[in-house]
Image (cartoon, rainbow, N blue to C red; front, top):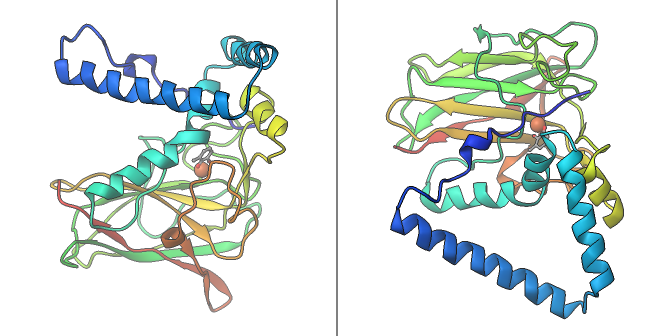
Length: 269
Ligand code: MBD
Ligand code: FE
């Protein structure tokens, strides 16, 4: 079982910084969130009993594992935040990081280590370029994905983080070609309150099969994204609602092996 990474509570912005802009932004965003919620409560004539039930439901988060609060926030809002990134970028489309990124992973040349005990072979190939189409030599391309059973290495304690993850250093051609295995649909942890919330709503806890990427290069904005596979299960009903058309790739086939073509166009910092 995957145990997602909790967010460090030190990320909570301080109200004691004396930053006036920050205070104004907090007033703007929080007061408008409250206003939007009030409008929904009015429109649906929500009763005191329902309100108390809702508060009681939220109290379950106090007893839940640490990752449950970041999980429910990501479930409803992370994809919106990443959409906002594209207001300030001209490169390829970014997407949510998810809770399973790891900093320290093996550097690879042309193959991501898999346990070799299952999973269909997959080649991921493409290029890393700037807005002018010029290769970004030295860019670090992080790739991570679930195994063939939907488990993330390093979070499922039985799978070493050396597997299903790799960092490729991009050469002067900008091109890369990496062998791994095809990930499968992924079920977010559903035993806790976030899963319970989906269940109450009559929704499922599945994400479509996906591959995660992060590209870092000096002078460029960090580029975090995912790839989804056209026609696959849950692509049209991702529980975290993060799938975007530009990220749904039609798998090609070469010599009986599936090929995912994925190019990264980086924005300048
Ligand atoms: C995942 O694997 C993921 O990619 C996201 C965005 C949320 C939960 C689990
Ligand atoms: Fe994921």
